[in-house]
Length: 142
Image 1 (cartoon, rainbow, N blue to C red):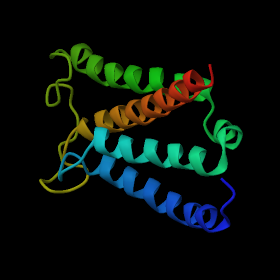
Image 2: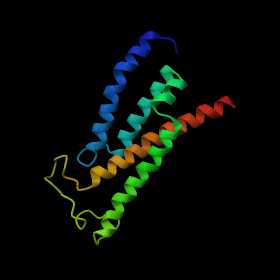
Image 3: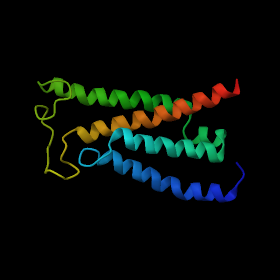
Image 4: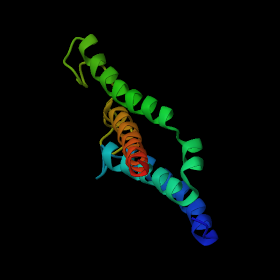
């Protein structure tokens, strides 16, 4: 795409949208949203970047290899947090028995390890969206 107006607006909008996606992920345990919604917002911003600036620049920002690592890392982080509950003498994804700080209701640190789980889900969703987008673009060229 060679439209300078779209490129400049995209450069302005993407950072704000990504910060909003991070906000949605981190506040998912006390408000509507969470890992899926925030990850979808972040993934969409990276797809937008690729659509506006081209496939090569998009690969430089978030390559297929990085996407694969983020996909695996997100789910492994989720499982790791869940296994902590088992090692603490409770069940998978247990919160209280694992000794996580609960905090005060309505505060950002009030969900035990649920915000950590939201981060893992957000990483997984964003990288999966980008991987699927790249696969669809590669299929189209065949």
